[in-house]
Picture 1 (cartoon, rainbow over the protein chains, first blue to last red):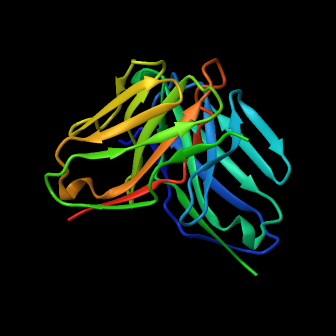
Picture 2 (spheres, rainbow over the protein chains, first blue to last red):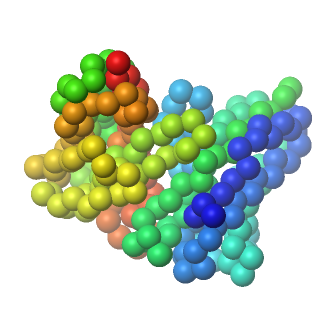
Length: 112
Length: 115
């Protein structure tokens, strides 16, 4: 089992809809969770971090964390074509010496 | 803004060559990292460093070494390049501290092709 898993997609959503991305992780001791966005041909950039169970909102983005079920989600409300990118889930894996481990990423396509 | 600069955007080398990838950051970050990114495999950590002259192996260190002689510079060395090291190499840096270590700032990447 991979330490951090994501559906590779592509996740196709119409403009204005909600895009829902999921990420599961295997290490129950993980404490820190991050979402990075990577446009095609560019490097990743941090868009969200979450540390506690529940929701964290930042503009059109909401991160959701459920440690009991070992998943973290990212919701993108009012999706725009400019949101088309690959979204990488990253987890601080305690069992790996607190190293940041990335999932394979979910490609999102927002269609006008 | 934090700037992480990688010396080359594209690099073509021959099998067996010694390859140096350079990375410089200008925000006085303690932590520096080297990742490679391959389709279907995501980002994988090669080496990282929390301080000058300090280095730690990541998940895939075989065939690589690193050097950190100054705080702002972290070099990745391919001792004898092989075709399976053809990849996108990403350098990143972060500030040391709880809640900060994992907030990575990435360079623009070096696409290395080994022929």
